[in-house]
Amino acid sequence: MAEALETPVSRRLASVKNIIIVISGKGGVGKSSSSVQLALALLNQAPGTRVGLLDLDLTGPSLPRMVGLDVPGATVHQSSAGWVPVYVDRSRRLGVMSIGFLLKDRGDSVVWRGPKKDGMIRQFLSEVRWGDLDYLVVDTPPGTSDEHISLLTHLHPMFTPTTERPTVPSAVVVTTPQKTALNDTLKSISFTRKLALPVLGLVENMAGYVCPCCNEVSDLFGSGGGERLAEEQGIGFLGRVPIDTQLVKLLDAVSKGEIPGADTDEGKETASEENKD
Ligand code: ADP
Image 1: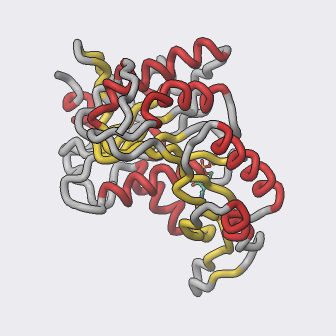
Image 2: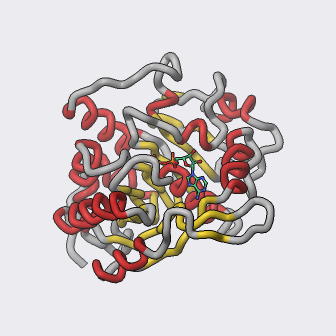
Image 3: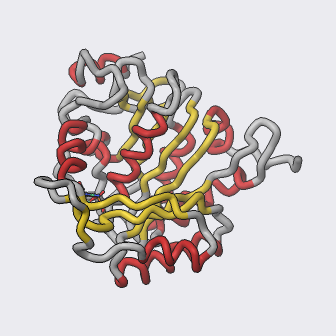
């Protein structure tokens, strides 16, 4: 296999087996909740699996809230070997890094031009001490923005498979079935082609509605559009997730620290302690 170019990013991420970048054409389609669900599903895939969640939505970070870490004690600790992510569970199997942890006030907004965002993304990729990870799930902002270009530029040396790292970064595309979302999703797919980013597949979220009384699924906004788009574009279809009030309850439970499959007994009070070297 070809020799890959070594950079601070590729050196830091050498201990990460798989990088999955979650993208969507539009905001509000469920990209961040899909990133969290994907991370939890991977975490529960096999005992001992370790997963990182990296929030690159610099202007609208939502992962800390979604994983129950939007609490005062959950802060990033700087060690000599780099930033220590905030862990959701005591066994340190699910770590999260987000600009949300670095803001003084969680209500603060980030108004940065491209170069400053690029610097932050480079730091997130090269300075977070994830340790050995089976998967790093990267949640990105909606659309195709400066953040995506920075991310893929910094990851580019890792696009060449090596014996040590046979898998290359790849994307999961999230869409809803509506036509407007599908048009934007097509742009995201075209973006992945231009940047030679392999697509693992497409998720059609909010496809149909699960009635909380009878569990029957009705086609509120239609469904199947994502699957058709995947077929037309020659990418895999990963599945359909209906609008489900249970999912909202699950995400609420997660945001209170009840992570299915992870040992969270001691809760987040210990998160900042755990993160100290
Ligand atoms: P995005 O990251 O694309 O902006 P989010 O993941 O933040 O979207 O989701 C937007 C809102 O929709 C959140 O409140 C989330 O809980 C909710 N949501 C996402 N997917 C579903 C679903 N399948 N059923 C019900 N609610 C959902």
